[in-house]
Amino acid sequence: MTTSPIAPAAPATSTGFDIRRIGGRIGAEIHGLDLAGGLTPDTVAALNGALLEHKALVFRDQDLDDDGQLRFASLFGELTTAHPTVPAVDGRPQILPVDGDEGIRANHWHTDVTFVRTPPKASTLRALVVPPYGGNTLIANAAAAYRDLPEPLRELADRLWAVHTNAYDYAEPKNEKAAEHRRQFVSRRYRTAHPVVRVHPESGERGLFIGGFAQSLVGFGPAESRVLLGLLQSYVTRPENLVRISWNAGDLVLFDNRITQHYAPDDYGDLPRLLHRVTVAGDAPTAVDGARSYVVEGDEAAHYTPVAA
Image (tube, rainbow, N blue to C red; front, side, top):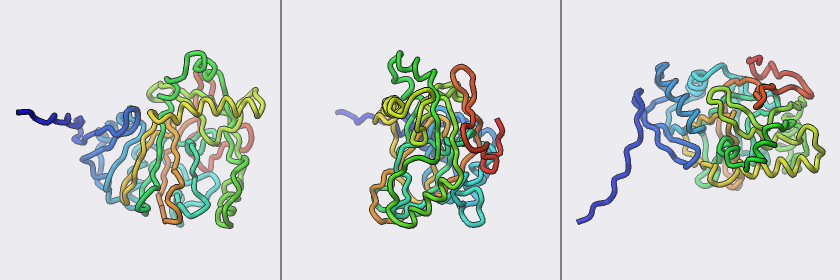
């Protein structure tokens, strides 16, 4: 008589919730927590530790409203306003509507708001309306990508700086709503130089800090920049470095914006999709040699993030 193997139990923390990995290199689901209730400081500390390890945490079937999402996000630090240029939800200055209206979908790899000097520390996304198919979110581990680089390429990347901007050659807008969204997005121009390799301020890990807003490399021309950035980005988006989040209404995802990228494939036709985003304020990225990010054009975006670093 043979018996079927028994799957190992998910590791439980001392605070009582379970962590179940959902990807080989990134991603975990958190079970046993009601985010609408109060979380103790020990629970928040344990969640922060899980975030540092897994980079993206998924909380299924949460009964949260906007106030609940704001309360939860604020447990991890001071909140930013919704966006440097795009309007917030009416009456909710810290909530950005991520609305999949046809033509204004952010279907490109990026790290949130890297065109300012102090991008968010972390982002929360909460699903309000999801399509019956498609509409997933892909999240990539930028630390694993860095570790995958051949040593000579890592040594080069350690010395590179990239200029990130919100104003570049976007695809032609599909309709007037998309054109208006683009006008809002670039209504205030930002260009910021960040290290291509960022040292994580809590874990000390090195990660590739690039993505769609990184448009050029300091000291390189446009052609060389495209080739080198494309080569480095190809390591970030390797399948083994990704996790795919399939949404249900009520789900919330928390991800570390300092060491991940994400992408929302445009694969759900004209179906509605609506998420609310709340971001936690971050600091200025630090390079391997200790140098900090600096503004090239624009300002410090003090109206967006309260952190001065």
